[in-house]
Amino acid sequence: MFRRYPAALTALLVMSVTSLAAAQQAASDSSRRDPDRARDRDERAITADTIKLHREIAVRDSARATLTQDQEQTRAVEARIDSLQADLKKDRQAKPRDTAAINRDLTALKHMRQTLDRDLDRDRREKTRVAVIEKKVRTESGAAIEEHHDVREDRPRSPAHRDTTARH
Image 1 (tube, rainbow, N blue to C red):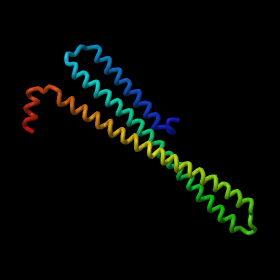
Image 2 (cartoon, rainbow, N blue to C red; image 1 turned 90 degrees about the horizontal axis):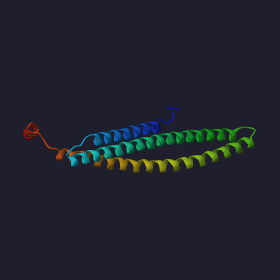
Image 3 (cartoon, rainbow, N blue to C red; image 1 turned 90 degrees about the vertical axis):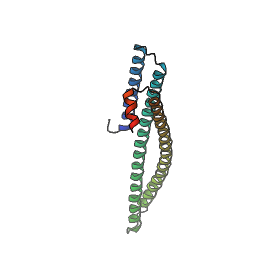
Image 4 (cartoon, rainbow, N blue to C red; image 1 turned 180 degrees about the vertical axis):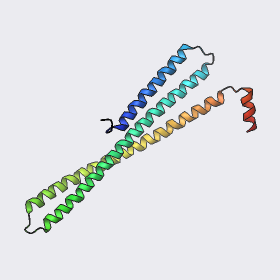
């Protein structure tokens, strides 16, 4: 069962792990009284951004897996259409001509082409969805990186650290 839906399982695990991380962060924040509230607020913002980013990455991976599966299904339908066209050609060239077989082939071919059209529409929608999610992940990633950068700039530095950074 887990082989069929690896992206969904990954998304579920990431969401549960990030929820656990948020709970642990909240527990550690309430168990100690840190006088530097701004730093705590920044750390909570980083944690929230990171959790949000991980969720978006899980959704993106799931959408990519769905898109890949849809594309494989579309290729299978295209192969089936090619096979039906070959069968139809063979039935049309057969002597004596079997009109029942030709009609079956034409009906099946029509049905498969309709299926292909639906699959192609679904693929386009899924590609658009993946592109939107990719953009959202890039935005969340940028926000998380910016938040980390801001916290590093606000962090008080020890004299030894200032000396090593001044040399570079």
